[in-house]
Amino acid sequence: MPDRLAILFVCLGNICRSPLAEGAFRAEAARLGLDAMVDSAGTGDWHVGEPPDPRAQAVARRHGVDIAACRGRQVTEADFRRFSHIVALDDSNLGALRRLRPASGGAALSLLLDHVPGRAGQAVADPYFGGAQGFETAWADVTAGAAALARALAAGRAARS
Ligand code: 4NP
Picture (spheres, rainbow, N blue to C red):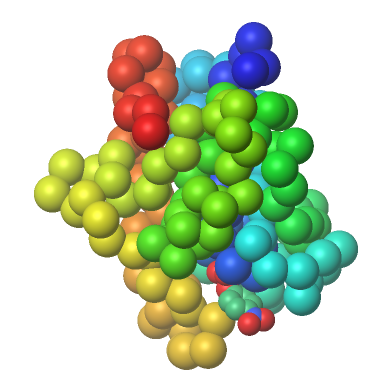
């Protein structure tokens, strides 16, 4: 386990939801003065090396967050040793992470919206194949999740599984 808080957000393509969650969490951690290493990754490999989808960059920018420097990468088993917390954006990616998780365990695994009271078990819907409104909804969801997670980590009470 890393000796410092290290949070990895994981979706399918690593070009829409998880870079948004990474950006929202970085902003919230800065607000709270929470020291953490933050990254994102995808369970799929289609967009390795690519910047976030232009629609994701645009919605983040509209809310004052710059995610242009993110580059797609695929999650690996080694991430379970490098990160203290791995946070999935939906249940199918949580399932993929459970299958990838080494027998030795490592990072605490959770679903982002499990950290938001009243929203346990909910997914951040994939906006990739839809219109601009889907990206606004994804931004609202990742912001709620990132804020709740950052508060829990700052208070020393983020859920483990
Ligand atoms: P994300 O969205 O998982 O939020 O990054 C997607 C991006 C690309 C694809 C699917 C979802 N794709 O099929 O290429």
